[in-house]
Length: 119
Image (cartoon, rainbow, N blue to C red; front, side, top):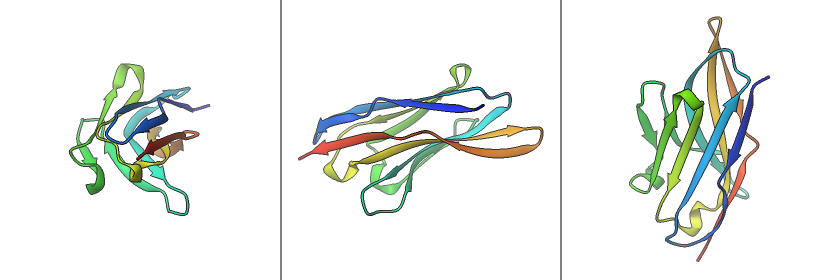
């Protein structure tokens, strides 16, 4: 059974930094895209950043230049380095991975980790 375990959330002051991690286990397939989403109270879940198996990245405009997504393929882990955090970055952050096995692609979600940025 595929499990995603996130860590690294917390409370930080505006301008501070946090690093989120998401480790994937239990998969017998290959991990394709790894991504981070976030959901603020009263808002829809939105894509923050993604990284493909080949290392191509894509970011939401609101985090470009401040956040960096990376992955460690042997460890099946994705990271999100968040710098110059702003109060509007406050949200629950979710890890998402696409796993391909026997020609089929499935998407899995982590449980979410709270990030709170105080002004």
